[in-house]
Image (cartoon, rainbow, N blue to C red; front, side):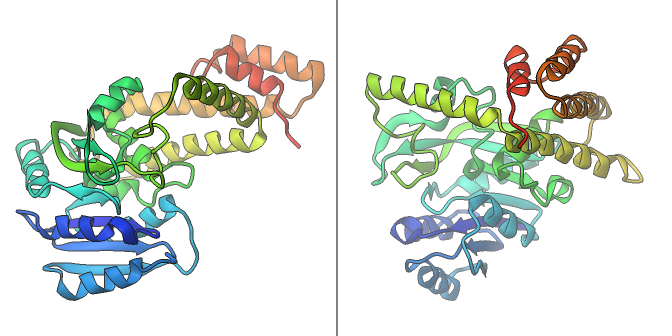
Length: 329
């Protein structure tokens, strides 16, 4: 069974084209689960019309208040029932062979639970930007192609059963990509299988699709670095990062609590993931204790943690300085 999880928020302008591309697939899905995140335009009317004429089951879930795309995707994913679940944005456009190509890749590579593919980047009118999503990933020095772009991924149910619900400290795509990367469950298709539409309302428009002058880029980096340092030194950010590790501890715990290790899980890779996660978790415990101090006492505690290697899993001296000046009010 094939499912598609989709979120919609004020997507009236582009959503019809996306929905038509799904209905035109050479291999149709069995269900489309859509979370309407309290849209204020005609998105819901468009979805209702689709439901009446779609050649597959359509389940529309409405959020009474806007909760953001991450929570909306969690809502949609938790309602899917397929063996293969595609993640879908509201403003892209799929090539007719996308679903068939991805399912074929899964069948030919049964050891993988996570498949991602390339996409052709376009402007708001689907005019090519002469670069693919993977091209932009290389420019941005991302290690694993499309791993953090949810709209070009499909996930097997076996992984979803352990990975859902998505922790609040992660975006849905980064969470799945991290698990797939850590346990070597990923497979990559280099061929573009959809258009990746870039427009001003797209979440990643600032990094993909926006024309910037040299001065814009320099100014943007200065602003980004200032905001990054300020944010990094808040206690809220410390708690947020610590929750990420807690989420991984819980995920590993789910696997370890099974009567038998899942057939897709490599014991050696899981052991390595467990060791790294536990080291980071112990580091956070020690760092949290250090933050209870002030002044010279905190300096002493931070230096002690540094000597023990508790900052190596993070950004080394930079993170140590962040802890030294971190506000705990």
